[in-house]
Length: 157
Image (cartoon, rainbow, N blue to C red; front, side, top):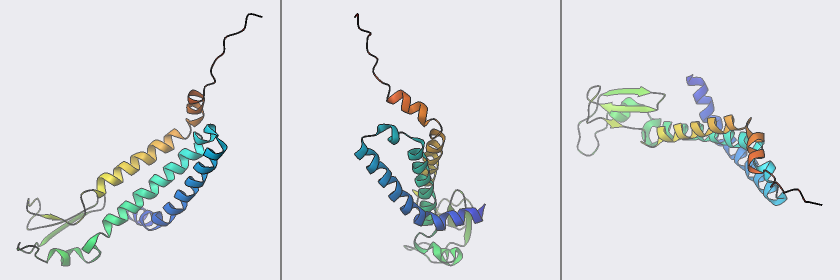
């Protein structure tokens, strides 16, 4: 699991730029053609899901490498910040991403090294990726509903 997360985190920023470019080209071409059917097609949803998955990896790697965490966490926790005592206990979690420096486990005065926005952003991007991936097979149904031709009344001729 850790190897998958690491590979996703390393590849995703580069893949995300490529996917974002491809999605932008797809949207521009679709809008210029004035083809709403293509805009609501499964390819658009799959590109959006792939882009959201790349965002998951990018945010995860950002949180993992944020600030001083690149260094050894034990070393980082040894530094006293703003007049506090040195923290000695470090506990880490890969998912949700977490690194704590504290005097003892559960210490309310502990310090979190990972920014607070990282885990909610990862979960939101993962939910978006799942929703777009699940919507892709339903795209033809959605397209028919949205682009329903107006019904005309039969003439009395």
